[in-house]
Image 1 (cartoon, rainbow, N blue to C red):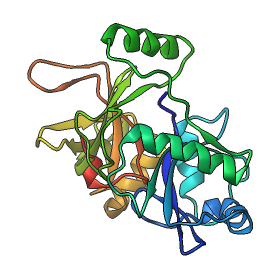
Image 2 (spheres, rainbow, N blue to C red):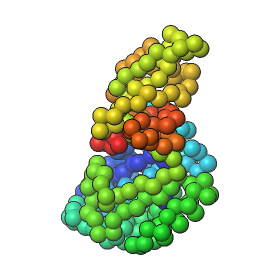
Image 3 (cartoon, rainbow, N blue to C red):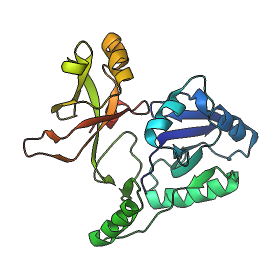
Amino acid sequence: EKYDGWFMYIDCIDGVWQGIRSKTGRHLPSMAMYDRLFAAGPKPNQDIRIIFEAIIPGKVFAELNGMFNQQQYEVTNAVLMCHDILFAKYPHTVFMKRYDRLKSVVDFLNFDWLRIAPVMATIHDVSVWMGMYHSVINRNGEGIIAKKADATYAAGKRDYTLLKIKRDLTLDVKVVGMVEGKGKYAGTLGALVVEEKSGQRHEVSGMSDEARHLWWNNRNLILGAIVEVEAMMRLPNGSLREGRFKAVRHDKTEADID
């Protein structure tokens, strides 16, 4: 299942936990409590990286995004849903073998807030995973992740070995420009100009009034940022139907652009 949280990881090198980091490799002060718990807990006997999605039950991404990104705020109620692990000694291990090892490591660490993201099924029939997708959507979930069972890990790479099947069309795109608003929004931000990896550009709105004023007067805060946008669908000419801004993705890099 796809969780509506932040991608994070933690390394253990030479028996020392290195602190929780975002996908960009930035240390996260908001996760300081969990850093301390890792440091005081068991140590693996080899160098590893645990990869997880950090969520807070009952919180949506827009709320999490601000909490995890803050420098002066310490999260105390997160759940870390582990979905992969890397071993320095075995860089070419396939996913299902990595997953089995991940379960062993999570059991060994024995933290109640460090959990396994369960594999829903290993299947070849598309109709089966589509049924799983609809069951997740029907209970207001985000969607599902499909991973190729015999694929090795490729950092920062999106291809056929990892697919995200989500309820709405969502894209991670780069902010490359701004458009002044009209009427109520004259003299402030009307729309962000965002760009996909293909070079296709879109104008999206949906920002809060506070964000409109902040970014219009401090453009360096948003230009070049990776943001998530939503749309009902993609039209034949490549444009988005009812494209709208969802959130700044502080946990994403240009390698994640769709």
